Image 1 (cartoon, rainbow, N blue to C red):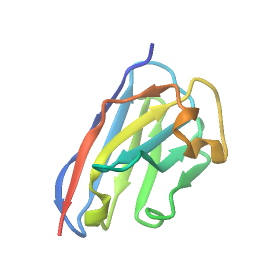
Image 2: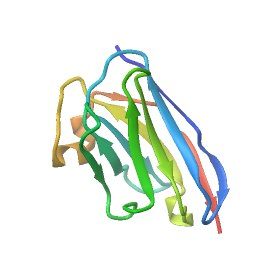
Image 3: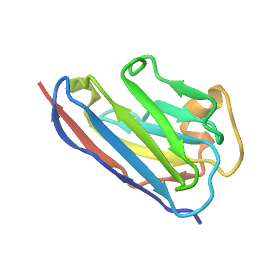
Image 4: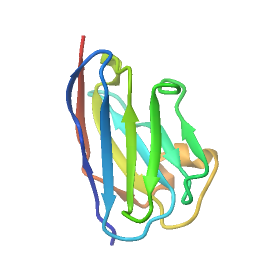
Length: 124
C-alpha cells in the first residue's frame, strides 16, 4: 500500500502563487492532481506520465499551473500561479500502479491511490 502525503496548501490573495507537493511512500507511475470545492464534484486539474515526458491540464488551469515530478524523491509538484478565487478547493494528489498515459488520466477512476487533500483558499 502506497501512502500519498500532500503539502503546501494555504491562504493566498488573488494573483498570488502556491506550490503543492505530494510525496509517495513507494513507487508509483502516472500521477495526477484533482480538486474539490464545497458542493461540487472532484475535478481533474493536471496529470503527468511516469517519465514526466507527458503532461495534461484542465482548460481552466492551462498557462497558470505546472505539474512536474522528481522520481528520485517519489514526489510530484503543482506550481500554481495567477491564482483566482475560483481555484479555492481541497486539492488531492493521486497515483497509478501502472504506466498509463492519455485522456484516461483525467478521470478519478484511473487512479489507485489518493492523498488526504490540502486546502487552497484564494481570497479576492
